Length: 299
Image (tube, rainbow, N blue to C red):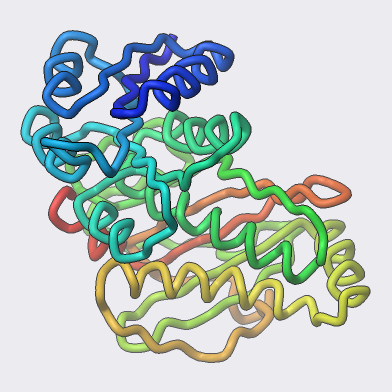
């Protein structure tokens, strides 16, 4: 059973989150202040921590900083009462794996906990978790309807030579470039070139899902290329915002299977999302870019 430590100075919120987590089959412990949270973290050894940002005496940021000194791999989701980019960005740079804005539903909590629990590299999943949230909001505007986006998987190749990818389909020997089929059979994708940093962003869906998206976009006054452009640009803006590197890119284009089927790259991160509209669509995003620029202080 996954263990979660809930930290909040508001007893009613503490009780509410504890109840939500137990309903989701998590083993839960609670702390109503930062000092107690540090003590309970050492004893309870949670897999995940939900941490309130605004607490008296020891606030969320100081608590998080001290948690990282105890465990540099601590998985922490911050809870904030306002969607303030500057505060969230401060925590992102420090290495949180996600955030929720109060009030939130049990569904919101379940999704972000699932994102964090599913993958082995919390630093990279942090990036894709924030992209997921942005994509969901953008898709709602495109389709003018309720859309749910779920992060299903994250896989990496050559992010760090010391990591073992023996069981991964993306296994590779560090330092050796490999041929990579950028659009798998039976898929249609769009590519954006990141100039200056020798990066590529590739988003793709199955052929039948592409036709569905094309019709869905057209019915709402959009070209399907705009859907994929939003996806790729969310990745690029996410990299730029998190790393503080100014990135420029070429206009998006559909992948040409005759000329674009192979690319020589060492660094690959692949995120797979499930986009739920009238049907479920598997959206694959390949980031051929050195994501060590992200969260550099913890990689």
